[in-house]
Image 1 (tube, helix red, strand yellow):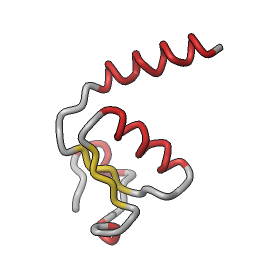
Image 2 (spheres, one colour; image 1 turned 45 degrees about the vertical axis):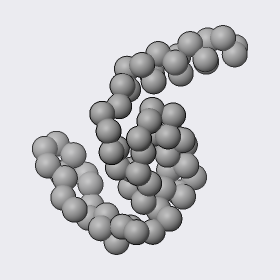
Image 3 (cartoon, one colour; image 1 turned 180 degrees about the horizontal axis):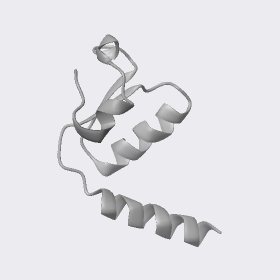
Image 4 (cartoon, helix red, strand yellow; image 1 turned 135 degrees about the vertical axis):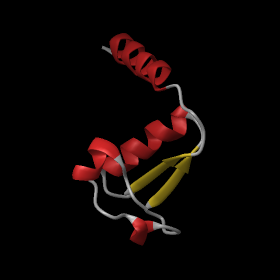
Length: 70
């Protein structure tokens, strides 16, 4: 596993996490968000998006949700 571009400066080899509970494949924006939340507590180390995700849409939903909850 290798990372190209600007991310290559700060990302270490994560191949040790393949086929473990720390490796998460996501297909939807909701799964991606859950993986990010799980990564915050250390239960996910690698997130693989298996499809194109509309992260702008996800951001808008989060923003709307946050504003409505307050």
